[in-house]
Length: 356
Ligand SMILES: *Cc1c(COP(=O)(O)O)cnc(C)c1O
Image (tube, rainbow, N blue to C red; front, top):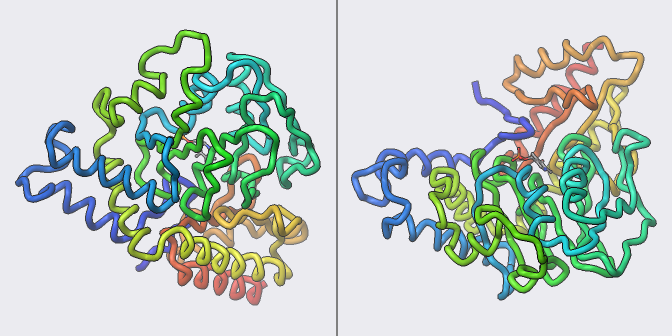
């Protein structure tokens, strides 16, 4: 049976990515060797790195003066690397959930942290508004898509200091105005590649301003000056990321995935809003994530939760059980998910409703 993969991360990759990654594992660039067993310093792997860097810059329209880095340690390591490298005196943070919270905790190790607003009071079910960011902050950090709670910030905020964003779960789903940013980072396992690599795009002239000593491996300049080859990079996830990037370009780039994200999310939110059984957790439509749709059964139908998951499983729908901190359901609609899978889920919801 065809599976409809709604997992939140690691999550669906395009068939193109899977197929070409398998090919590289068997016979990489006609070397007769696997990409798993060849030097990262070989000219064939160097070509992978060069093309991956170039495609990130092309697809995301990254201007001159930024470095594209491929690092280990997950997005979680960036929670500390960002302030280590960029927090001179004070940084501003927006608290929109678990990931933001963890980023704030690390930043406090390095300087003054101004948490400008939080939506913790309502279990992070909305995006705070009307906050002000101090102009003397070194940067304003926000999480563009809150993978667990299903909220998203779809436009680059206007604040009086440079931006830093954790875009782990929505990168490549919209255009980014890099003139506002000094850094963007994303763990690969949501919208790019298998787990194991993190994409970091950092502005070169924002580096070297902090006075503190930075351990070599945690210093962005180490990796920027060596093309992410200071040490052995995570070769397989990078190779897979290159396949996804080729696929993104071939499909029409970020503009096209932006369009698809809106279409897929609208289809599902409409079904939820028109349902007698289900309701969306995020009430304000402007705050709703296009990548992670979080919904629950209305209180009078709560006991049907397991039944619905089973009902979905029978139809090949996997990965919709909600995160433990929210409950209910979460359908992740990342770039690689076809709209047909969303149609199957919407049909399952209607049939389930009819049954009850
Ligand atoms: C998944 C996720 C993370 C954590 O990524 P790791 O690679 O597991 O460290 C951080 N931020 C966001 C927004 C995420 O979705």
